[in-house]
Length: 145
Ligand code: HEC
Image 1 (cartoon, rainbow, N blue to C red):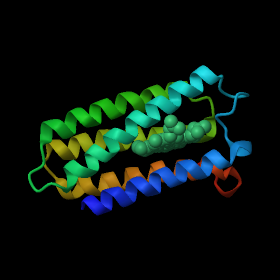
Image 2: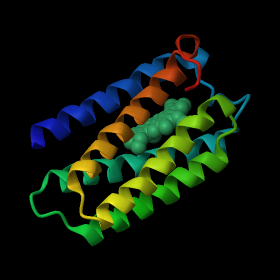
Image 3: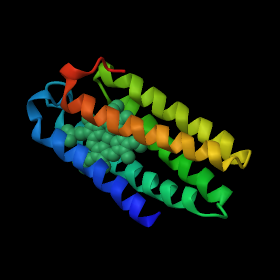
Image 4: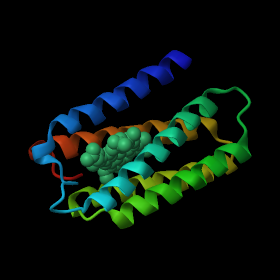
């Protein structure tokens, strides 16, 4: 599983680097976000990725720590809400709404101790992270959904 997490983390980083190369299409450019706001968004993104990796590790354990998963999701939700409020690109808003909704669903499944559903939620969440990163890099290929 550790290998899996590393693989996913590499994929995530890769998609971030890809969009870094695509500056022209970056909706977080100074026209839409001043540098200070952009810095805050990136900072919260970075925070979310730490929690994302923690969740991958915790979800893979046989005896999952319910309270730790809950507090990790709470922290992650706070970051996601900050990003949603800072973001001025409405095309990316849908992804943030989906992400926050997924976190709330995960908290419910965690309470029910339904690890199978929790893992599915986590996969869906990872998909949203990747989809938005590529929508950001290649806006012409996506409809913002
Ligand atoms: C609403 C779209 C969207 C979603 C959803 C999203 N991201 Fe991002 N993320 C971005 C954009 C846009 C950037 C790039 C900002 C830039 O480089 O200009 C970014 C950058 C990042 C970075 C790099 C930060 C830095 O310091 O450069 C990380 C790490 C990251 N995201 C992690 C995640 C994780 C983990 C998730 C899912 C839990 C996620 N993102 C979901 C849009 C999104």
